Image (cartoon, rainbow, N blue to C red):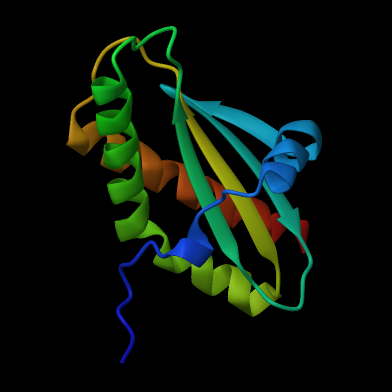
Length: 130
């Protein structure tokens, strides 16, 4: 049996082209302290790609930015399964980008809760789209 709680290479949004497309054509919403960009596409192969970013205007030190990105990735990794299953059912792909816009270093628990809310909202968007 395959491990469920992973965030492998294929699940990371790294393609410059895809990220540009996401920023140009994607939809966005704010769930404080995050701005979420997402773009659904109807592929035969359902995939879910994810990336996280933190402004270096608010966090000068790379150590802090990396810590926040790690918190976001961990919260996402543990909660993405229901969204993945919905995408598989509907044969759709999703590119997802979390941008942290807060001014202070977050704790893990609030990040976990907010990421959960965001994923629920995306599942609702997916259901409405069909």
